[in-house]
Image 1: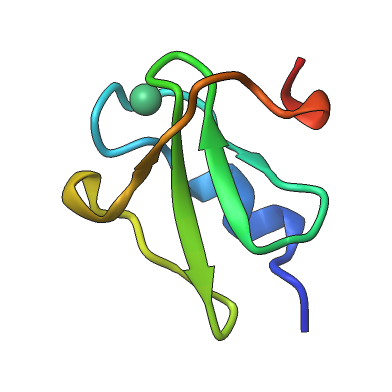
Image 2 (image 1 turned 30 degrees about the vertical axis):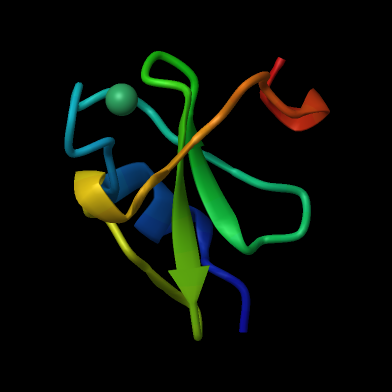
Length: 63
Ligand SMILES: [Zn+2]
């Protein structure tokens, strides 16, 4: 089951408290401000700064 809209509305970037965007594949949550991707494992978002991956550039869905 994909992450639902309600959950996405509740979630925020733990670093900047800003909005996050679901990736096209649904396997990550992007914070545009921090250029970080939080991984989604088994439909559970891992909202930890130390677990997030740094982005070199934003994917298309985040622009
Ligand atoms: Zn952020």
